[in-house]
Amino acid sequence: MDRPHRRPSVDHSRRRGPAGRGRGGGGREAHAMRLGTSSREPLDNIPSHSRYPAFTRRSGMAWAVAAVLTGTLVTAAPDRPSLSAQQMQRDPGVRVLTLQEALTLATEHNPQYRQAINRLELLGPQLRRAWGAFLPNVSVGYSTGQNFQRQTSYRDFEGRPTASLNPTWVSSSDAYAGLNLSYQIFDGGRRFRDRERIHAEARASRLNARVELEGILAQVQNRFLTVLREKAQVALETDLLADRESDLQLTERRFELALDRRPDLLAREFDVEQQRATLSQAEGRFAIALLNLRVAIGDPNIVSLDVAETLPEPFDPASLDIESLLAQALAENPTLRAQEAQVQISNAQLRADRTQWWPTISANSRWGRSSFESGQAAVFDLQPGNSTSGTASWGFNFSIPVFDGFQRSYGTASARVNLRNANESLRQAQMQLELDIRTRYTALTTAWATLQQRERALEIASERLQIMRDEYQLANVGIEPLRNAISQEASERRNFVDQRYAFALALVDLYQTVGILGQQLGIETVPEGN
Image (cartoon, rainbow, N blue to C red; front, top):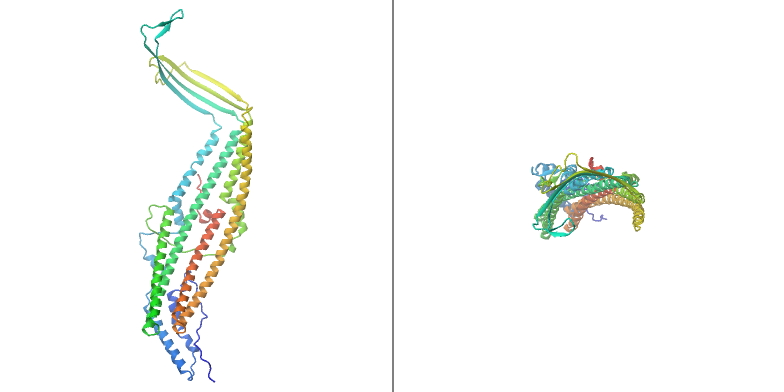
């Protein structure tokens, strides 16, 4: 009894590597190599019994056509330049930046970054103001003027008002120059408390500036990563376009051999045009990403730029010790330390308000010289009086607060409530920081797991596509199942690139939340001396 009819088997044990990792997996070159090497292997499994002449002739014709198409495709497909060749052909007027160079330029030219650095220059005068309260207040004064008077009557020797027969204008002038000095001898220790508060405010300002600067660095890095993703997408879409053009050449050859129909050829042409549109959209997104990066850097000398790196290689987040990150964040996180400074500010303010119940002692002294002349003799006299004339005074002031309408009581109670609220805000900030770090660490591990799933899905889609190509060349499947496999494989390649980008963003977000982004980038966010 004859054996049942069987289709020729195809060896599918080999797998293509995932695309997007520099191995060329899924590209046209790898596909052409698979065609050249696999076109002869299934011949060993084709039955050669003479009782199946029709099957033998069909299989032999199919493999002959496949061999012809493979040779035509490999020799006719144009060679695509490698990435290094594309870099060599880059316009010399384009500024090529690495991530470190982009961040360094941003610290020098980004307007928001420079504004934050400029505000730090106020810390020096702010600290000097705290010490200035312990010094006396000194002022120098000068005044001069002229007085005019016209008397129409006068009192005679007996005190009776008498009209003046010839009233005239009488003028006089005066000048004064003096030195004033005052000093607060005792104020209950308020100046010491104010000094503590000002130092805490300066520390909070410095830490808040660090938070702002790290946010700007994170923005620049995110835009740099966006450029890398869009650049990788352009390279991927270019590779997919070359694949679609190769598929079109294959279908044209099969159409000439009457193996495919006109609708199949039109479907291939549609795929090519659709891929060209997708490539144009990717190039547009890449151009916009470059513009956004250039604005974030802020260097007016950069007219056109490009990036010289690829998306960073992901890693297993299990290598990160979440407990160590939490401990480091509790010790170094600038947002949390700024909240601690707010507690110190509230505590110093409460202690300063309590000094209002103490008496105050102050001293003052005044030295000066004056002159009073008739007419304009003393006007703008820079040395009023003579070398021996002058005035001097000094005094002490002792004040005891008795009653001020409960203003001191209210101020102290308000400062006490503010201190308690500041401690509660600190506790809330600690809990929120731990929540944010654990949440972002979970997001990072999820991104890593999703990336592994995307990689496995890409391997499956690539292997399925290769199987469908082999079956299509053997005329075992039509063009629609092959187009479906091509679409799925292209979608998985895009998803793989997007997931690598998502992993990189999740890592940046985690480092920014911990407060060590500048440290990881090797950039001092708050320069010394500010």
